[in-house]
Length: 234
Length: 355
Image 1 (cartoon, each protein chain N blue to C red):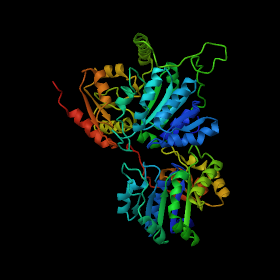
Image 2: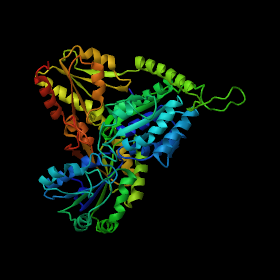
Image 3: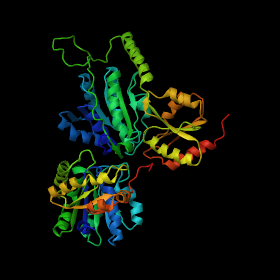
Image 4: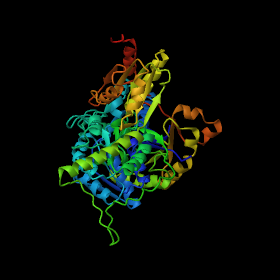
């Protein structure tokens, strides 16, 4: 698995609906399997729907600690953050990492100002990964250029530019191998413009299995997703 | 075919409005529709349109009235408590015979209620979208693609009939993501000879007004408007039928609930229960004739809603005793599960005929 995933503090950022929560949950699951059980922090103070907190019981049963805004999952959508989050960031290590699942956009990233000291310390120790998710089938980030602007806005809001691009291009249930293959050039261009690698390409196992062995070799860092975020009728 | 994008319902509806040449959006943030305003704020300036966050919902709806009177395609969006604030303005728009699009991404109520999805504004949308004798067109999408298609349609029908249209969605539809495509081209809005565009000395002034000085004048105007409503009822009804051909039992549901009901219908069909789904797409005008006909063919119906039972009133009025109509609902932001509804279908199928 990529070098960025070995770090102690892992930020997951990106545009609204780029797949941050699905990726963060799968990453947490993978870290457990590697013997590095993480804590995951639901830092989405923007949108009350489809969030990490919704899966806390499942996750905790799997050995993943879940922290979230105090009133997550209630009708009081105020961004009250528990002090335990500071401790998780300050004490995170490679063997006991923390994943911060942010809300979408620059609005969602602004919350990191609250944790600047701890994050800066991690960054200085080279223990901070800023994973920037991009889905090139989202209407406002159809290409590398628009995605760079989005990444810059998020970077400006939270004070940290991406250390890696995660290509999570998908069309939900209509995702095919070509959805993914068509996005590879844009993902690479985005990485080049940001000066960081494309650390992973995220997909559901069925999409991976639909690719020929030759096509599979073209995909940088294939990362197979366990999809937990589902609609009520799925 | 047009390229598909993965979009939230709120974003898709905002993009659809832009593609339908709407260049005037007046809003005020409220969960769970805030992405509409956020999307408009990002895109509208690039298209040379007006995105304006008003000082309140009341202000926003009256800005829509003004823009519409000037002949512009204009819209506002909000969620339940915000719509309550807008209802005065909606009544004035209806009284002024102006087209406009009002979006309600419903959340739990009454009062401040909750921020999770709900369908408990059905009565408000269809019976009393404001004071006075008036109706608005009400469209109820049940997929992100329909958020697109019905947004475009709502603008067009609102202009055809010179009346406000409402897109009645819920928090689930607003927030969930699905692949969507957009039509390559949406026709430009028609000429509006009644609009306040300045006479330039070449014509008599147009007047947009909701004040009539004598009761007889007001009665006349309202009666004429209701004659127009009859034409709307005859021409604008939309509905979907799912597995109804051999059905003896029928679920009636709209919006996101209809999606859950489809899954429940499939589950019950696997158990051999002949059940189908009737989905009103327009809530006003309500598919009365279609439901009446269906009521004569089946054993019973079950209305399913995320409310304590609102649309079920209209189902019963339409069916008018031809078959029993039962109700099942969850409220307060709770979304019923397919299994829960399947249980209700089984219960309905096992019910002894009531004498």
